Length: 208
Image (cartoon, rainbow, N blue to C red; front, side):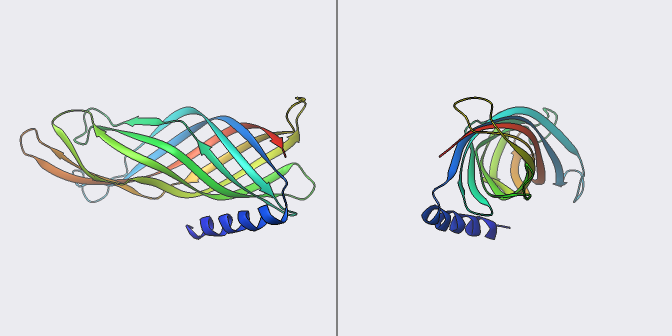
């Protein structure tokens, strides 16, 4: 799926030279991040424990339009923090920042409905919550494909042109973290997991 990024950026370059239409806008919404533990040595080779986090978010985006589709870039400038349970041996806080998505948007004929396909990438940083836990190697990025379905309407607001309602689903690749519990046995474990992000949003945009 990483080839999508190259294809979309190439399309963006050629479309920007051939057609100057597009839009810039803001997006407000709420999302649920569902995570599942895929590898946990302390509970056997695999362990299907899961959890979820709900949060509001905001994003900015820009698009360049062609005759049949548009190519865009969306950026979430906010940080999100996820704490593990205090009872786990890997008690730590993960910070997710700079979530960026490059995408292609395709209208469904003359209807207001459209579909989107893209690829997302965010930066990860990990910090132990206690001095008895040391964080070793960990994944630096969270990335994976994105699909979305939405509807676009003319805006009744005078200085804006477009309103969108959209449902989006991100499917992130597996990430890992290695931690050492220095309280007593100094056990070192590498745990892995993967996550999906589902969002519902409202977008307001200005054409240019």
